[in-house]
Length: 99
Image (cartoon, rainbow, N blue to C red; front, side, top):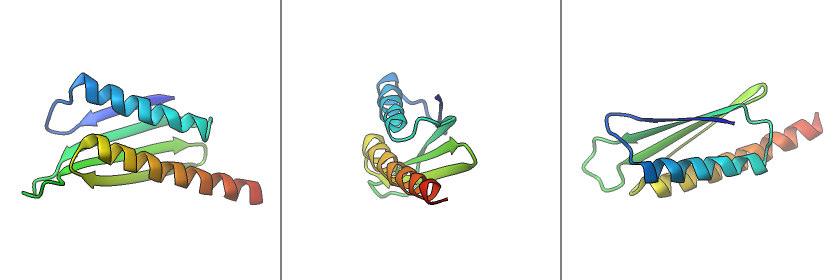
């Protein structure tokens, strides 16, 4: 699976990039036909503490799944977005079985 990580208007450190890769790689356990993944890391302009935004776009055959989460840390946002994608994958697989 091809994983592209884009940090918008800042440089993400290697530790964060490795964390994100390890979390996204685990999605292969739930669906092994994942073509690629794009992860966007942004800092929201608000003064709120929950200004770390993670957007993940997952490309699978015939479809794209998307999750966006905003929390206090990139790690927490990544965890929540990956969990949302896991649920979407399960739902997608259920639809495929019914068809």
